[in-house]
Amino acid sequence: MVQNTHLSDLWPGMHEALIDIIAVMNRPARDEELLSAAGLTLERALFPLLIAVAKRGPIGVVELADGVGRDHTTVSRQVSRLEELGLVARQVAVRDRRVREVVVTDKGRALSDRIDTARLEIARRIFSGWSDADFAQLAVLLRRFADAMSG
Amino acid sequence: MVQNTHLSDLWPGMHEALIDIIAVMNRPARDEELLSAAGLTLERALFPLLIAVAKRGPIGVVELADGVGRDHTTVSRQVSRLEELGLVARQVAVRDRRVREVVVTDKGRALSDRIDTARLEIARRIFSGWSDADFAQLAVLLRRFADAMSG
DNA sequence: CGTAATATGTGCAAAATACACAGAATAGTC
DNA sequence: GACTATTCTGTGTATTTTGCACATATTACG
Image 1 (spheres, rainbow over the protein chains, first blue to last red):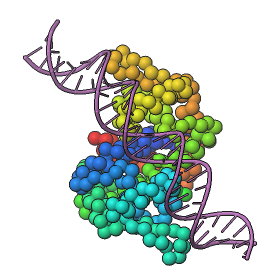
Image 2 (cartoon, protein in one colour; image 1 turned 180 degrees about the vertical axis):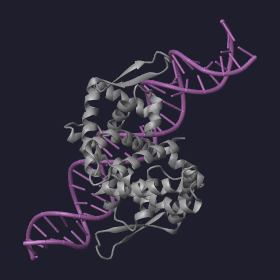
Image 3 (cartoon, chains in turn orange, brown, yellow, red; image 1 turned 120 degrees about the horizontal axis):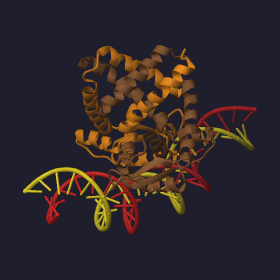
Image 4 (cartoon, chains in turn green, yellow, red, brown; image 1 turned 30 degrees about the vertical axis):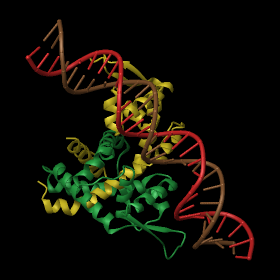
């Protein structure tokens, strides 16, 4: 078990590292970099949504909104735009006809795949020089951390 | 050195964990939680900025804007509002008089301290059940990761 | 059945953001 | 030193993004 003193000592530095990481990930320029690396453009606000749908779809608007931390009405409109662009499709869920499940189309999947590829390339650069063991360890601990946060 | 196959295998899961963590950290509701835990309110957009200034100040507007991933004109206006609230102050930098350094006031520092306290409390909950070794390991690897990303 | 709760979406107003531009200070070059 | 380019900051303006109030449709539950 983590000792309180130990936590107080290490937490600030760890939090700072987190902030740094999030700063890099949040940079809007980064999305556009990824997109242009994939040879595409997409409105800024739609990008995270497409990624979320690709990863978690089929998914309802409310659940999607919870995930990205925005109002469901905002997300509803943005999904509409993604739909107009042919990147996602909506269909009434069979079990619960209130829900209009959002799912990526082939076109949307192709786009998100290209983004994944670009992202993997970046990861390769970042982790060049790391040992297999450290990398694996970080993967495990990050997963545990994410789970602990969500719970 | 990380093998390419190893990276391809583990990266998707690691990236997913990162997304999950950032989703939690980005949730506006989380800021408000922290604030209300500290017994305060603050406009949503100003919150991350105050934190950044408290942690990294004295700091110029452009550098601040880079950190939070928004246009410098946006940040300039937001800093003005923080100034009106008495949470930060601006002063011309001595070495470079183009720069108007932003720095937290006592009032701003008090607020950010209370937020830090609330955050530490949350961290305590998240990491209860972790071993000292795992916690320390995560701290080290996150720092290395952050540095590798920035470089 | 009747009431409450949930999922979605539209109208409208506010908040947040970026682009174009400009002034002030510095850096670099000759 | 003079000249040009770059950097930092900030204002005017338009666009984008967002949330609240509200309405409809469906499900959940007593």
